Length: 474
Ligand code: SF4
Image (cartoon, rainbow, N blue to C red):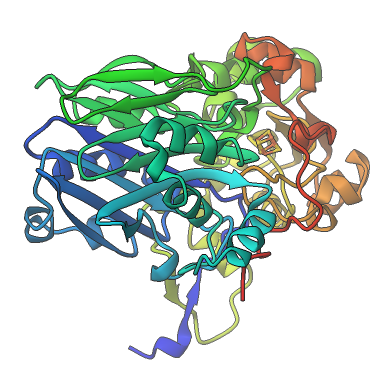
C-alpha cells in the first residue's frame, strides 16, 4: 500500500479534552480501569495510559493510539494490583506525543507520584517559570506536570497539607486523579468545570471517573459527583476523607459538556445528557418556528436534539444521511479528483428521501463551518429543495481556555460573520441558533451554575497574561 496516498480524515469538530478513571480496592484494578477508559474513549483518542499499584509496587504502561490498540491481556497482566488509574488524552496543552501522554509519573524522595488530569490550567506558564527558577526540571510540555512539581516540593508537610498548598496555586479547570503507592486522591477545581463522579463497585471497591458511562460498563453504582472544590482521599486502609480547602464559590460547569462533549448515556452535573439534548431540540423548535417536510441530524451530531425538535414541532424525523461506521482515521485518497470525497466517504445522502423536500437539519454546533458547508452541498446535490439548519446551542464566538480545543476566534465562523452571512456561506435557506437562555433552560439548572464563555465572552477564571495553548512548547 502506498502510504503517500493515505490522508487523515480532517475532523474539524471541536475536540474533547481528556478522560480519567481510577479504581480502588479491586484485584483486577488495571483491567477495570481499561474498561473505564474504553467507555471514555470519546474524550481523547490520541494516547492512553494506566498506572497500577500492587502493595506499593507501581507499574505503568502508556502509548499513542486508542485504548484497545494500546492494551492487550498480557499488558494488563503486567499491571497488577488493587489500585489503578488511567487517562485518555487529546492534547489541549502540550504536543501530541508519548512523552506528553498520561498518567504522568515521577519518583521523588523514595516514593512515586502519578497524576491524570482533565481540564486546562490557565496559569501553568507562570507556575512553570517559577518552579524552573527554583530548580525544577520538567520532562514534558504539559500543564499537568506543574501539579507533580508543586506536590514534590511540599510532600514533607504530609499529604493533606501538600495537596492543599499545591492546589491553591492552580488556576483554571481540573478534574484530577493522583496516586501514591498506597493512596488515591480525586480533586475537582472550585468551579467544577469538568465532571468527575464517584461510584461503588460490586466488590466493595471504588471507581472515580469523568463520566457515569464508565461506571455503567464496570457495573458500579453511582454514588455522587466529586464536588467542585473537593479533595477526596482514599488511604491505604480504604478509608475515605473529604476536604474542602477553599471557600465555596459559584460553580462554572462547562455547558458544552451537555451540548456536545459528554456521552448521551452519561449524567453530567446531575443531568442526563440524552434528556437535556432532547430538551434543547424541543426549545429550539419553539424558538425557530420553521416549516419543512422532515427533520434530520447529520449523524451523529444533533441526533438527540433532532428527536426533541421533531417531537415538539410535529415534523417527522428521518435519517437523510447515512454514516459509514467503518471509516478509520485515515484512508487512501482516490487517484483522480473526486469532489467532496472526504465528506462522502463518511456520510452519504439518501437521494430518494431528499429529492424535492424541504429539509430541516439539526446540528449541535457550528465551529468553522467548513464541514457543514460540504454536507449542505451534498444534500442539495441529492435533490433537497430547501435546506434549513437548526443549531442546538448559541453562536460560538469566543475561544475556550478551560480544556476544549476550539480554534481561536478568528477561525470561529460565528465570531467573524453574522447569522445571515453564515447561512449564505453554508448554502442554507435559513439558520437558527438556540438562545443562551433556551440552552440553560434545557439543562434545568440555574444560569449562573455554568461557564458560558464561548457564547458570551465572560470568562469565569481570567487566564494569565501569557496564556495560550502551546505556551509550554519548547
Ligand atoms: S468556554 Fe465554553 S467550552 Fe470552554 S469551559 Fe466554558 S462553556 Fe465549556
